[in-house]
Length: 376
Image (cartoon, rainbow, N blue to C red; front, side, top):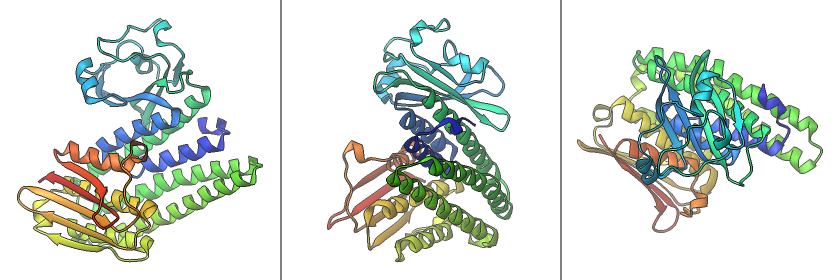
């Protein structure tokens, strides 16, 4: 496995964090965007993309990008279909590293208005035995070419991404089944895939722990291992809840209560929840899954950063819109670009995808408030 060649503990920790992050979302569209963001962060790339392959033809059917503004994307024109350098991985599904794109014999140049790109890194994303798509990274931010370690890191991430995509595809499929069958299948996959993956990463970290000589570094690695053990315990608890919960308790209102109750165990207090409107009848299952994902993300951010002693949640549904508000009395929100994490961006991405909006800001009287608003 490529991760065995990574001896830099900081890179291993960053890789672990990225794997846990992408595996936390079972909604496919948001997951694909999150994978590209994680790849750019890990390799220090200015631009990144995931080209999803057409299963029937030799072409890129979907192209998810990071690093380009909407204005740049519009100016460049249609997304690529797989010619030139991008076609290399389509013809030979092996990781590739190029120091200068313009000197490669298969290079065909860029369309007008395309930003300059020189260094390149690519890795296939496999779902079981099928190549689902390819990760493309360009422009090492420090100006140098991508390293062999960068290639190993991204190849490992691509392996984890394949597992996460498989889970996301499964999640979309099982939504068409009965609620009881849905719960049973997800529980089995959490046990057979996610937990086994977490165990594997934990073993890799334990191997790094034995190699580390600096005591501070050893302490940090041990802390990550302990966090991983707690995560496995939480996943197991979720499996038990999935297997034990009755089908009649699966409406949106009950799902929200379950998420809030689970978060309350971590906070040490029970968040306040208020419902307004016909939640279970007016909100589709697909939209409800977005609501739950945003709620989990917001509560997770509060638990990690806010140091709050009070959390208030209101879910308002009418004939036109769903309005979700999550407010806390913690440290407040820093709107500087450097402080905006993947969680906040993901909540905003979900809202934009559904034609709505997501506002995160300082609450009057102190703390932070998330206002997530989308059409029904």
